[in-house]
Length: 456
Image 1 (cartoon, rainbow, N blue to C red):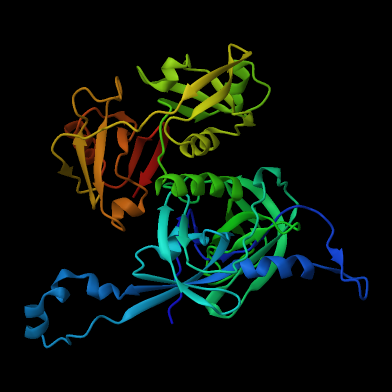
Image 2 (image 1 turned 90 degrees about the vertical axis):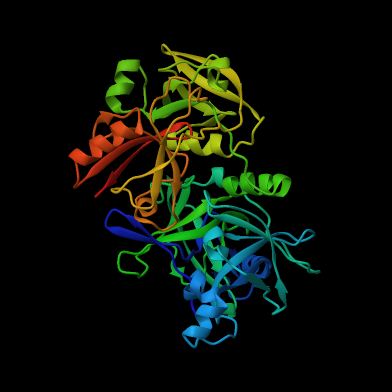
């Protein structure tokens, strides 16, 4: 049996996408009624039937080579005709709707699966149907045709505080639930995977292999997170785990159930974090919020009256911590949604409404390969691009697991600078790269947000 692991570089650390069971809400465990000792048993009795085992069957990697599917090739090299031996990986999941048979797990658990089997606590097994996925938040929704299910009620992760007790529950390897406990050690963690929409709950609860997709619950027995990653410098747990917060999970599920996918829109404005120096120059009392740096012509932001140097402080009444937090909240809003934004302009608070628009169409001219970015192709932005005055180079394709992919480049990124030089065409971009072979610093736009990648 093979257990599926995923590791992501975090400077010198590695983030292993395993299962993390994490905790929430600081209430006192109830007495067991026998010897007066505090216990979590009554809560766990209700919660554990909702956490399931996910068994995933995929083909062996060698069989993905097209040559191995060619009958002549197999005959010439005397290869067996029988089907490829499937590989198997396991993770965990959480039943969130008993009537519909909906089960949440991590996207990385079921990615490339040919068959997904869900095993309940009572040992019943069901073949699952994939309803939809969102790689950006590492969430997948499955559906099983089963009766007498028990669902875990959704809690509000926005109510969590650092120090709240939480419990992590998984169902690895089909052996039954594993339960660990700890506290919320940090909130709003990001920077773990540049591709994703991140707002992780960090916990010190012990992590067990195979628990990816399991439940992080508070002491009320409410789901406050889906376990997704751990920090593992040497492959072992060091007491730092991450979970996708339930508020984000709910937003993703609502769109998957409604559309079969997450339809992210755009605001049409780029934003940056507020430094202490910038806060002082703007007369702000804190660095909370995101400052608008550019506004696209005819974008939803421009139509709503948003201007450069405006500071967005709230979205629908919820405070914004920084530009990543703004990206997360906007990125989870479906196209056509109208938002109430709280702004600070010239030191005065104002409010405005903005309607999220469809992503822009940025098909470029003929694509070219980039030797320094193996696996990626780039093109000039098409004439009349909806980006308006934005100039740069469009990333048209990035092969999965290629060097360019592993460095964080993604299709649809717009490269606006390289090694502190503006680039307005593929020719300018390649010229800059030829002068700097050892290290490349890329400034790019991804949706409404600016990113910097260092490629060595």
